Image 1 (spheres, helix red, strand yellow):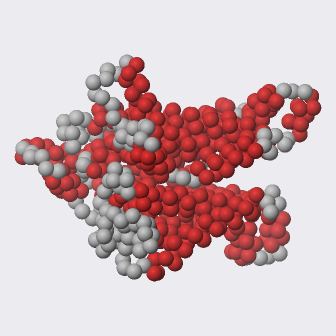
Image 2 (cartoon, rainbow over the protein chains, first blue to last red):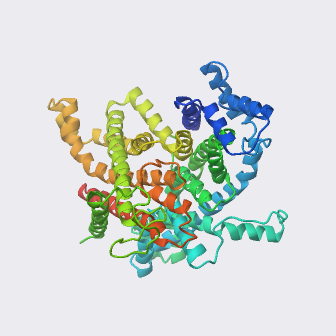
Image 3 (cartoon, rainbow over the protein chains, first blue to last red):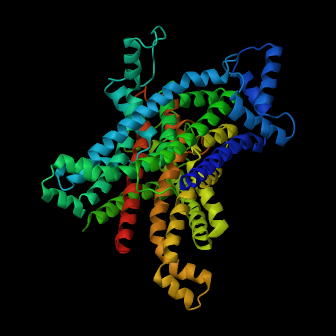
Length: 334
Length: 274
C-alpha cells in the first residue's frame, strides 16, 4: 500500500515533468514574433543548394506539419504530443533531406549513451572509492592534497575543462586527437574500430570524468569522515576488525546511499555538460546533432533531438529515484 | 583559524580581484572595447596592450574587463531574483502548508528535474543571437528559483516547530511579523551562500550557451569571447592570450565563487551550532 502511494506520487511528478518540458518545446516556437516556417525556409534556402520548387513545397509542408501549424492551437498541441509520445516521428531532416530524423538520432544515440554512461560510471566509482579512503584517512597528507585538487577542479564547467584539455593535449603537447575523426572504412566492431572509438573518446570522456570526480570525491569524503568518527566504528576497531573490512562494511555501506540519490539529481547537469563537450570535440552524439540542427536551421531535427533529450533525462532521473528504496532498506516510501 | 575561514578568505580575495577587473576596470576603458579594428591585430602582450590584441583588432585586456562585467551582471541579476523568488515561494509553502504547499513543491520538483539546457538551446536558436543579456537572465531565473525554494521550504518546516517561533505566535505576534523579524535573520546567512552559488550556476549556464554562439552576440560576455576566439581559429593560430584570457578568468572566478559560498555556508552552519 505504502509502495503504491510512493510509486504514484513519483509517477505523477515524472508525468508532469515530461508534460511541462514538452509543452515548453511546443510553445517556444509559437511565442516567437516571426513566422517560423518562412524564417526557417529562408535560412534553408540561403544555405546555397538549388532546390526544385516541388522540393521546396515538400519542405514547406513538412515544416508546417513539424511546427504543427495546421488547425487550431489545441489540435496542434494534441498532434504534437501524439508525435512525441506515440509515433516519435519528426519527419525528414531538412539539411540531409530524405533521411528521417529518427534514423539520425538512432545513429547518434549509442555514442552519447556510451560516453555518458562510461564517464559517469568511472567518475562515480573513482570518486567514491578514493573519497572513502581519503575520508577514512582524513588526517593524512594525501587526503588533504586530493581535497585541494577536487575543490579546484569541481567548480569548473565541463566545457571549460574540455577547452583547457584541447589546448593542452591537442595543441601544446599535441598527443591526443581533439576532433573526433574515425575512418569510415573501418568495419564496426573490429578491434581497430573499437580502438579508434576509444582513442577518439579519451579527451571528451576525461573532461567529464575529472569534473565529476571532484564532486563525488568531495561529498564522499565529507560523508565518510563523519561516519569514521561514529562509536560503532571505534567499537569495531577495538574488537579487532581489519581496516579493509571496517571501510567496506561499516563506513562505505552507510555512506554510499546518499551518493546514489545524488546520482539522480546530477544526471540532468551531467547531460547538459556532455552536450557542450560533444560539440567542442565534434563527437558524433546527440549534442553535436543538436548543434548541427541549430547551425543548419534543421527544425525537424532540432525538435526531435530536444524532445528526446528532455524525455531521456527525465526518465533516467525517474528510474534512479525509483530504484533507491530497494537499495536502502531504511527508507520508507514517502 | 579554522579551515572554513581560510576558504572564505581565499574566496573573498579571489572575488575581490575579479570585481576590480569586472566592475572597476571597465570605467577606465579608453574606448568601447567591443568595436572591431580599433587596434592593430594579433599583438603579443606589451605595456600598451597588457594581454595583447585579438584577431578582430580589439584590446584583449579591456575586452576581458568588459566581458567580465557583463557576466557578473547576468550572474548577480539571476542570483538575486532567483533567491528572492525561491525564498518567498519556499517560505510560503512551508508555513501555509496544505494545497499551496503541495502545488508549490510539485512545481519545484518539476523545475529541478526538467533539463534546462535543451530548452535554452531551442529558445536561443529561435532568437538567433538577438537576445539581450537581460532576456537571457530572465530565462535563467525560471530555471534557478526552485533550488533555494526547496531548501527554504524545509527550513520553514523545521522552524515552525522551534520554540522561539511558538513563543512569538502565542504572544500574539502577527504572522508576517514573525516571518520578517524572527525567521528572516535565520535564513539570510544561508540565503547569501546560496546566492553566491547561483551566481556561479547562472554564469556557467550563460557561457555554455555563449561558447556555442547561442547567447547575445551583440554584447560581450566571457562565453562569447571564447566563441569569437574559437570562430577565428585562435587555437590553430596559437593566439593563447585571446582564448586563454576568458578561460582563465572563468576558472579563477568559479573557484573563487565556490570557495566563498562553501566557506559561507560552513560558517553559518557552525554558528547555528551544528
